[in-house]
Image (cartoon, rainbow over all chains, first blue to last red; front, side, top):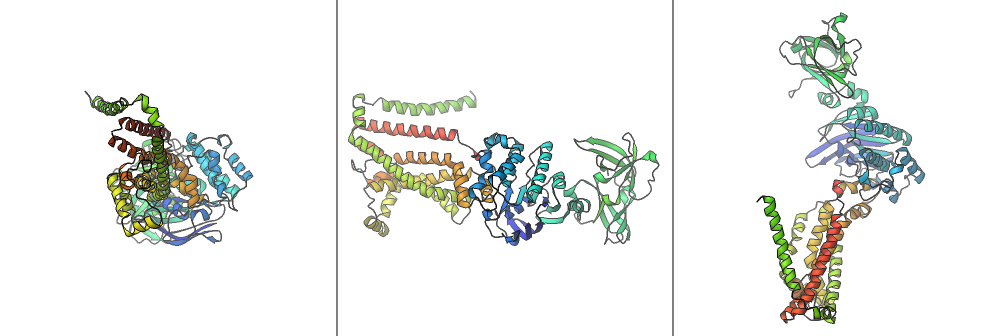
Length: 366
Length: 261
């Protein structure tokens, strides 16, 4: 439905290069990255609001690279929503009907959208008198009402509280399926990306570092920058001690511990960084008589416990710290496979499964 | 005495200064002749001439200022800074000098050709219009531009992605959002045109019942030592000015600041 080929664009001294994205009907692709990495620039360029340097944009069978925004049939919901302050809710939603095209919905379809987004009771209201959630729903309704099958959403739920955000994710998901929309969404919210996206592109300093399914990006990051953007990790330095096929053994000197992981192309004695997802660590009560001398295991004791609204994080202090006292292991125990842990335990064994570990060559910057 | 009290005292000194001037004017009003002078043919001619000329000048200035202000607010283009600078010219150059510049223009080959083949401007009604137009064009453009600056471009961008072309986005979004700024600018420019004297007298001269706008009439009556007549005309100008200020305050007071919404 939306096909972007090798798109390059710039704004001042900042440029974004070689963006290639393909979103089928009913698909959702998320651009994930921190602020100032060019996510909004990409959306504005696809919407036709900024010039492109090179590349092609297609919607279905039509190339729209050089078309003005009004002829692209792409709806764009900017981060600040840009609801027209001089119009009522209803006038905002019906704005696109003034320039009705063949793709536009009939009035009964728009009435259905209004009903679906639960906006019937606020149609006469001024935009100034809406809550954050209502404004988001009006912006979505206005975008849906255009009849466009491609939607660009720029952090549409960033200003909302968690409960409201979740309910709007469900609404967006349902609307996407109902109207078979192709959605390209920008977010820095990992949970939002996990919930809505089929595919994710991780953006850093104007470049796509990795594109893949949710599972690929979250569980098989291809570089250390991706781990910084896609989750919380523990980082440890080590050296490759054995390298055999797809597997290698890495010795972490600071903890006097070996890590076995899936990795290829690493030479013996090569310095590496091990990234371990904090919510994939298994914690085992020391009293269970588990072996602690095998690879991927560290004997630790609980240093501090931090509770947040929907997770609990433990900061663990490894018992064995040879050269680098102060190396702590952070574990998210809400999602961890920690069925056998007793919180009162002083000593625990932290076990790091293969798929929780990513290994990267150590660069000069590390 | 704190800064607050000192600064408030100075604001009251300002008020007092203008009130003293106004009351000293009112003390010269000749109650027996006020309405006689006000309703005389000559005064009514001046009022009609001033209103007509100012309205035409404002309309012409608005036609040029609106698109120019929009371009200066929205786009980056070569020469933009120079145009922005030129807009301030009528604000810093004396109106009499502006009038003289226009007079010099009509002495050039092009100006003479225009006078001979298009319209006679010097010492005519059209001269008053061109004098007022020259004085207000810059400030009208600058004020409308400020109005557009307050309306973020994101609204137009949103309109474009919903099927509006650039004209439709301007007409349905930017113009309505900027309407109060534009209206107060038009009223302010009209009041400024009504009160224009220096350029008008330089181009159109002082011909009774021909080029006698309100400010020119005040000058002519003062020159002829007709104080009663001058006071009536000044009162009319003062009333018009206060009315305009009141309307603008009402408009700006309820102004919607789109950028904060």
